[in-house]
Structure formats: C-alpha cells, structure tokens
Image (tube, rainbow, N blue to C red; front, side, top):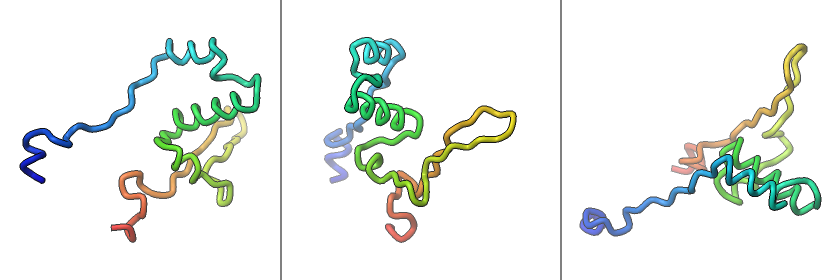
Length: 100
C-alpha cells in the first residue's frame, strides 16, 4: 500500500469547488434557489445550511435534530437575532472518543 501511495496511486483528495457569488446569483436568477415552490424552498434551506453550518453531506443534514436543538435562534435585547449551531461530534471522528 505504501508503495502505491509513493507512486501517487489513490493519493488524490476529493475537494468541492468553491461556489462564487456570481455562480450563486445565477442559481437565484434561474429559479434554482428561492421560495416560489416547496421544493425550491427546501433546496434553498439545504444550500444555506450547508454554507453557513459547514455541513458536508446529505448524511450530516439528515442527522440534524430538533430535540435537543442543534440550531436555535438567539435573541438578546438591543442586538440582532442570530442562529447558533451546536455540533455534536468532530467531523473527523464521528463516533467521538468511543469510535476510536
């Protein structure tokens, strides 16, 4: 295995392409993001959840839960409300310490 890695076999890493502001704007203009249908609204929510909470896969989206809440609205007097996302475990070690 080490010999193959030294030759560069299997050494390529998958990495998502960065979506530019222009590309995001195109998604809005073409109606792929928005609130004009239930499916489009769902797609938009998934897009922003991935963008702002760094959720990488469909599995991470599906693992979000409402009890106990991982995403909550924080409102403080005189401040703008914001969303707080509380992550359960490390993305590098999904099972926590017991998963080692």
